[in-house]
Each structure stands twice: as C-alpha cells, then as structure tokens.
Length: 108
Image 1 (tube, helix red, strand yellow):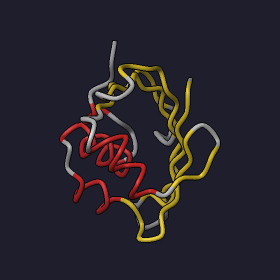
Image 2 (spheres, one colour):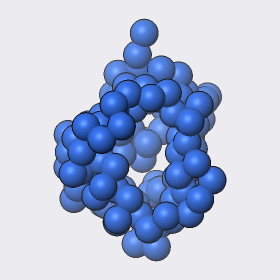
Image 3 (tube, one colour):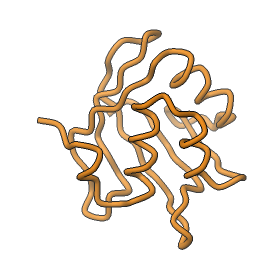
Image 4 (cartoon, one colour):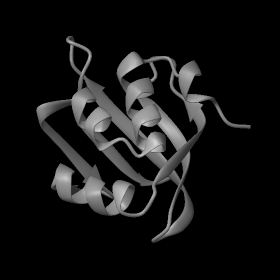
C-alpha cells in the first residue's frame, strides 16, 4: 500500500514528492534551498545534474511506502525509464523556513 503525497507529514517533503511525480522541475527547485546538497548511495552529487538525469530526463516517480513520524525519512518505490523500479530510502533535512537543504537517497 502506498501513501498518497498529500498524506505526507512534512509540507516540504510533500511538495518535493508532488513536484517529482509531476515532472515539475521549477517546483522541485522552489522547495530546495539555493545551496541544497544531496547524495545518492552515499556519494555526494550535483543536485541539478542528478535531478536532471535521474528525475526529469527519465520520468522519475515516487510511490511512498512508509514515512517517519516527522516525515523526513521515506521508503519509496522509485521508478524511472533508466533503471526501472527499485526500493529506495530518502532522508530530508528541512530548514526552519520549510525548505529542503539536503536530501539523501539510496537502496533501501
């Protein structure tokens, strides 16, 4: 069973998942801080290059399986046209202003 994006506990994470699933690059970057960082399987990546390749150019989609009580950690069935579907974990650092300053993803 998946959790609908509008049922996610944290508003910034909710906006991020909704934007990813809509393929809305502007909305993804609107919820990220200008200096946001990220990692994939423990290796830091350039946020713009990674999102372009792994989300926007390959029709990335997040089906949320579970979330932590604060909504900053998700287990997601992630799929895109490059890698197919995989079970992934996502962790978000959300600022007091309600924007994401870092996210980390990797195999769950």
